[in-house]
Length: 427
Image (cartoon, rainbow, N blue to C red; front, side, top):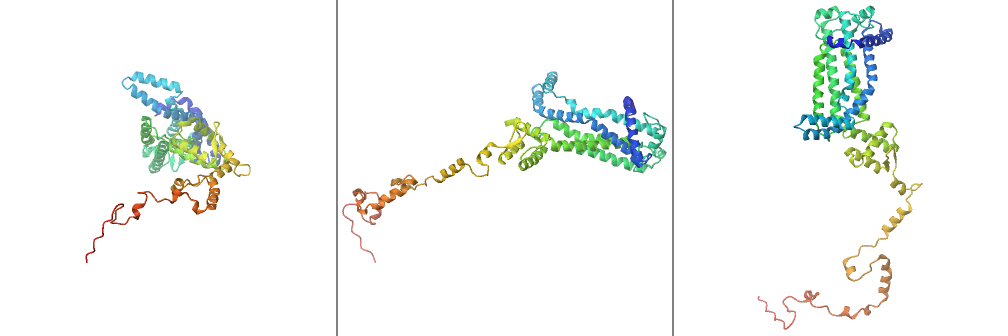
């Protein structure tokens, strides 16, 4: 580790100078020799570095999203040229060039942060060995060596011997308890950050090898932090714990406000956005407009959560526009007047539905009854004025055979010819 840290010695002086400036501020509050002054100086250094790395973090998010989108195409290339590795690599590079993506962009924040980490390790190792490094002079070196965080010196390690720890003015038990707790917290924060990414912010509709890689890293990184953490000084553990907590909070913010399409985080985000938009009738923030604009531009390629969002807006009488804004739909505007009453077309439609004729029975249709509701009254009046004897003679004729005469024939009698005599009853 010392050899690697010496490779980044060019940045050691700037890192040590920043720590000294923060120490002056916190030393005036907590005392120059206190562990809080030096510990908060390291925490402030981490926050400053991570603020400077925010543009790279945004680029990392965009690159990760682009890689997730390209996973189906990459899988097709792998299956098509599975026997030709060279052609497969060429097609992959061609795909990256056409889409403007870079697989290494997701590692940029870690790569950019590495020089600061090794420089800080070099500074703290110099404090442990009593060597002046960078802007840390002799008085500051003695102050840092006697600074303790919860009883553990900044330069102490989990694997130090009791003699080494005693030379720093602490006990081996205190050092191992503090370093063990910090290593566990550091590994857990790394695991939770990766798990949060896999369970909430990954498109569940696409199953690709990229997801399997991310699942593997979810378990590999915490183990790596635990293995290397036992050889880190307390000051470096403070650095890594702070940067892991920052990453976790930063990722929670991104997942909540800019989730990956098709993920569970997008479903929760669109549900919150639906409630807000239907209540206020407009989109306020620029990030919300950007997401609505992207959903509208997809058209028929929207996923399940995006279709539910558009349908919920339509039910509320709203319509999403191409610029990301939300306005009242044209259908609702036509159905309402200025005072909220029904329009003439709606009233006419209601009247038309009321004037529909009643359904006629089968007997009415066979007897040639009235076909329209408007002619019922006139026909009934004409029928009431006619005498009952004026019915047609055809209606008064006897019914034809087969049209009800069978019901009138008595049992045991023939329909025509002489009747058979009844047999006497037997007693």
